[in-house]
Length: 107
Image (cartoon, rainbow, N blue to C red; front, side, top):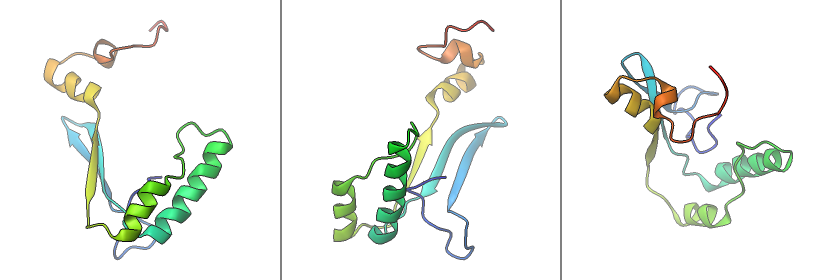
């Protein structure tokens, strides 16, 4: 789930998110950002409870961010590029050769 993603405008239960695919591989994830402070507070509260329960990927409640949304935010979007995957694309090497601090497990 993407706690910062905006719900789809016409399809309930769907978010406005997409993946950047280059060469048949996902290189990044993008989405329209949720700017409704009430819904965002609900989502971040849920996330903070998950974090308190031990979920390492859950987000914390960010009061400064929520306060900024209450003042008003323009429609916006974001993309998270996988730098290691872009390096793979441009250098034609495997993921193990692109990660700065690879796992020390045998192949």
